[in-house]
Length: 114
Image 1 (cartoon, rainbow, N blue to C red):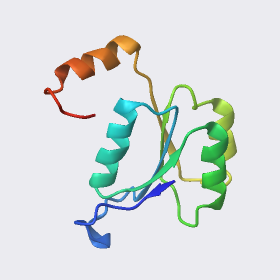
Image 2 (image 1 turned 180 degrees about the vertical axis):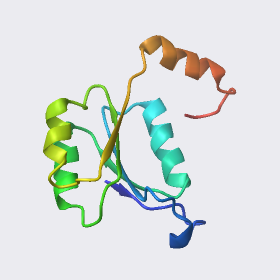
Image 3 (image 1 turned 30 degrees about the horizontal axis):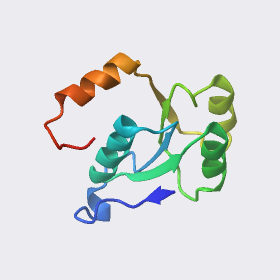
């Protein structure tokens, strides 16, 4: 699934890391992360598994500068396999214990979504 940049942002206002691959077993906090990154003007590519992330990396026509992955997807093998197709890719692994996710929910205003 490819999310396009926020309509208010033109091509010239897109940050230098223009394409970001977000990969993981998504739930509410990670969906919020992907939306915020998209609203900041990045092209967001979404994968739900390591195999899907690798397939996107192989076929995407432009460089992917950053992989944001949760700890269920990120592995040394995935990172190694991405390199030939996306040599400039950097990796950021996100891990949040269930207690942290529960605390995030507590901080939201009533009716506010992730």
